[in-house]
Image 1 (cartoon, rainbow, N blue to C red):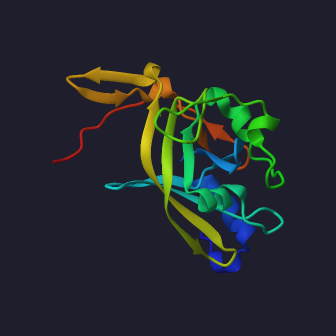
Image 2 (image 1 turned 60 degrees about the vertical axis):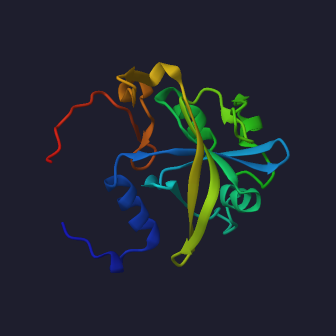
Length: 203
């Protein structure tokens, strides 16, 4: 089958892209709407784009009403965000925080999610997440007809759960199977890691 996207509407294109660009990592993003009032939302249009400077990118759409989503709004206003990598055990909580709430309503409060201090960073982190990146806003760009917001976040601090770490010959490695990151497929489907394998890269 060959498909000409020029003949498809944006909704149909979205559904096909999210079923074929798989699996996608999920950024579970905490921002601050007001003092001690935290927004938490998942995004699967997400990737690492640079290591010098260390940048992560999230693509953020609009609310069904057409309003700017709180994550983009808060990050622009406050300049800080915490990007989490959730494990499979947090799938239900991640899904629940995708619900659209009014600005100022906290997904953290609504879902009883526990936060912890993030040493060296002003915002807290989700206690149960094995990985958290304390980030500052690096750049925002608007693209497309909707438009979509591309948010580039510079990583300033990293939290790693000791359970997922291996240290050998002063080299730090993360055990992917212990991390067991939640990843996104199409529709309401998620994926988990069942095994890893290694192939030596050419020199």
